[in-house]
Length: 558
Image (cartoon, rainbow, N blue to C red; front, top):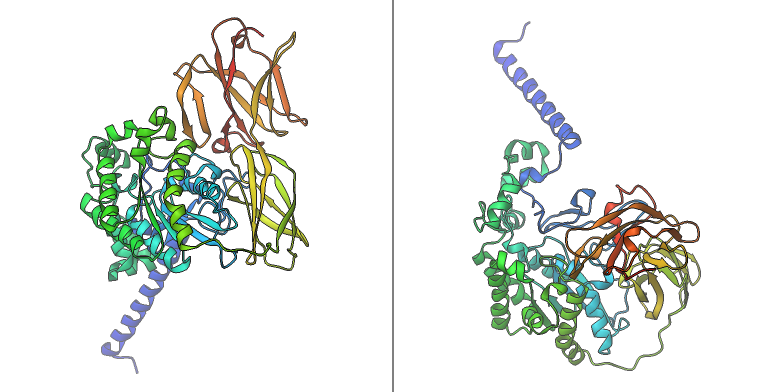
């Protein structure tokens, strides 16, 4: 007997539903494989004038509330760690563990100014703060300074990060560096308050978009305005989509951030951000924002470090204290860190008086080699007394940067890779759950350099590691203050640089020499010379790994 029409309808409906479900599942799987994961258009878009880092190389990953965070394990390239390389801890600088129970923790919460854009790990504000506390009797065997700085973070993201840190790290002191730049930067899509609310209290559509690429594609892929147009309008003081946080939203966020620090039950210090004169002139809201920081910190009775006042009293042009439009240079970081330590050290000492300690059951017996290039990537061997290979791996810090790819090579013997870092003598700090050992000035970091070798046939010499290369530039003028970038400090002034038609590649003895170019000979005025040094490999692929050599001043005939 043939099925009736009424019987065929449910069957056809069921077949249709099943087919639709299969099609939807297929579309979802296809999108997961082929479509870019842009969060349906809701995620933060990096503001290029505020973030000069290479974001497309996996330096960041998503965070469920803070939108994004630094990605653990990131390095510049497979064969070159660079200065920003990370271990398992998703922040730049020392991790919180392992550490003895009585090791104090100071958290420094901020954005790229705390992260340290354009400077080495040893030259960041948190690293300089650790040095300044050390000079005041609170050394690395007593205090660990944790750098909770993420490029691009607004005050809302810093507030969320502070809450996480209070719950997970149990800090003994807090330093805040809020409202330096990102809050007043142009909104390129949705403002930070909207993004935050969508994460802490998502709608049904938000939940569906977060879990399904298909829903995200259908509901969220709205064309975005051209970022260049948005930034240009913002530069005129007419942000088309507003700023990442409106002035009223920033006021509320600062109350939440500073108020939470004030009620955390531990010493807290707020650093009022500073800016070079050009930034103040071009972006007047930065001045209004730092006025808010002052007012709200005083409202809660939190001690202030007033960077603009420090700059007014500091010698030399204010530009010398900045790497660019907002990020502190090494000199700026030192200025801020010293003033912060002056305020923080007495508070820490009062809350945690020094006690007599037994000798630590851990000691650094040796370090090899004793000298390494600032370009990094060398494997360092650290010999320890009081540690066995069966014990958990410790943390090894060199110039405030973790030693990466740490390996146990036997009882009391560790090896690891050095990241690129500043020149000079650097302390090595080893930390286990039982003790902290410190070896002062145990490693000398040497930077690639240019020099003139005299004699009947003067030569331009490049000294570095075998295989390193150097491009040479000369200028008749020297800048009053260096211009900073991810390559470090450039002192060449004016716009009339000359690139010499030679590339110096260090041989097996770590040297390369070429006859001195005619431009560097004679009795004329001084000529200023700098090189860009690169590790071995493809120069184009390693462009961001380059470092300026120290300035060479060539005077008169040779």
